[in-house]
Image (cartoon, rainbow, N blue to C red):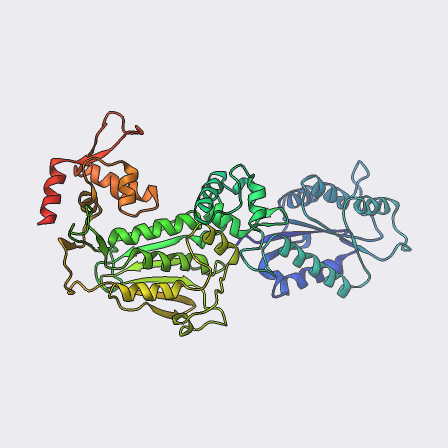
Length: 492
């Protein structure tokens, strides 16, 4: 986290004691010293520069301008202006946050120019008066804490409802808002209309804080969420064995909105799981079964992303082993829930309710607290071990056991295969990109293109029907002779 610099401006001789006391107070306070550094001219070494140039340069680079006004006006330059007034005017011109504290009441005799400066400051901002050092320290503490709260550096409310520091409406993607509106209207018949502005959409979803997009708004619809919340990424790892070993066969770090993270992570896991392709006795399409059902994988991943602790320095980590899938989620259970209660009907306690709401509207999650029960029931239905819930060193861990390869399953092929082989087994005749993606139940188009379509094209398993126009809307894909041989081999 970038530390903030406070520039203390005053007539140095008049406020020598107050300046040193403020420096010691801010530097010694357990909260303030985490965020602030204090610049004072007295602490500078000897340098070959004019003092007024150094002052103004420090004002230019500071984060907060703090000024003490008293009785004296201070040394004046050739134009009759003091350094204190120059610094105030520089901070004003640069739109720096200004905190002005005035010693004494209206009855105090002041230099006429200082009186004018105090009046000028009073026309632009709210000033605070003090008469003693403890009173000054208290007023400065309150002002700095208020600044930290306003900028979102410290919170008194939920994380997802707090303003995202440094974010503006320019950081919200209109395209992602439009995608969400189309999705939620189809899934839940929600009230948002297609032409709503970005600002109104966020306000309707309670994702604005004092006209600033909240952390939830950035995570849901941000152009680049990780620019503001760097640990909101998801790390996906695939190991061929049952333990963590290097080199890691496949390691991906996914970034984007929470919707992107869910889609990409689910696609990653499903592309690595073994598939069982059954017979066509029940219809023209052979049923496909993974060794962990996609609905269970998706439920586990979306819960980890929706309910994680976003203030943690850790990221969601998904690790697929030969015998199990582990999903590590930074955070703990709410006090009202225990590991045992997750196996029984329970109320919903979302850690990030403003993130959970749009995920519900887009039908990524349900709000009734049934996610863990659904996973348990689906695992039982598919003859799998029940999910394991673990608390480990500040993280909530979900463990899903893969179906044992020793189990007898009536299939035409049961094997852990490459994505090229999966695509070869899926394609029938000529199919469009969307038809192939839908057939594989993959949501993320870029993931499908990068990990399925391009490898299959490059290996010569499939080919385009219109190769001279690769981006044609009529483009379809079909098996090459090599792909047909591979598919026939898999059937055998």
